[in-house]
Image 1: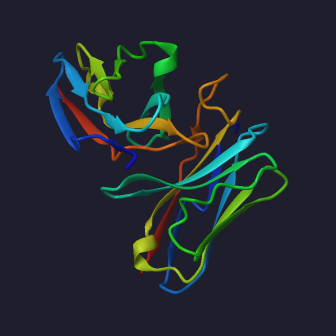
Image 2: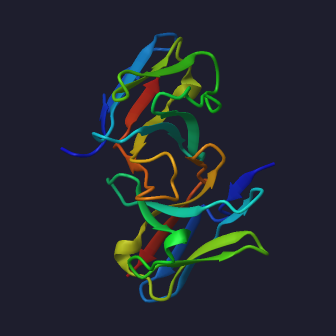
Amino acid sequence: GAGVSQSPSNKVTEKGKDVELRCDPISGHTALYWYRQSLGQGLEFLIYFQGNSAPDKSGLPSDRFSAERTGGSVSTLTIQRTQQEDSAVYLCASSLTDRLTWGTGELFFGEGSRLTVL
Amino acid sequence: AQRVTQPEKLLSVFKGAPVELKCNYSYSGSPELFWYVQYSRQRLQLLLRHISRESIKGFTADLNKGETSFHLKKPFAQEEDSAMYYCAPETSGSRLTFGEGTQLTVNP
């Protein structure tokens, strides 16, 4: 498939455990975003990667959250010591360029990883 | 504070009726503006962008800089328009900030 791929699609974990969520962006897309979608909260920006630049981590809610992007492609979002309030759908998106107003300038989203913390 | 507001969480109209989904923003400068849509069991996807001045699936969005609004409109709603709609200004750093969304239901 040519779309953004996320895994796992569903993850149930116990409070206090660590989880890793994976995102495979569309090949050739230089920009990669993570968002969190909670019931009644809309989409919350978490982190943004663009090429070799330092990531914009300004949306990460706490130091339990971290993300990396290896080789400019695959990204992993890690949540340590999960809490019940971390339960949400975590969406990954990629974009061909870093300027949304130029070129195709469109975010392509994955289907998300639904995290449930018991 | 910079923010985007979609005042209606739920909006219900009948097929054939006009529909308007409201979006107000408070960002400095002139941010580029987008509407994204998520149909049931589908991925979130771009519906339209202000810069293109386009009409997609009969929807248009007018930017009113004086009111800082970017409302989404369609003159005759269809049942297949039922979905969650998100208004999204592009804020500094080339990222989109999404509103809380409006769930549109078009009844037969």
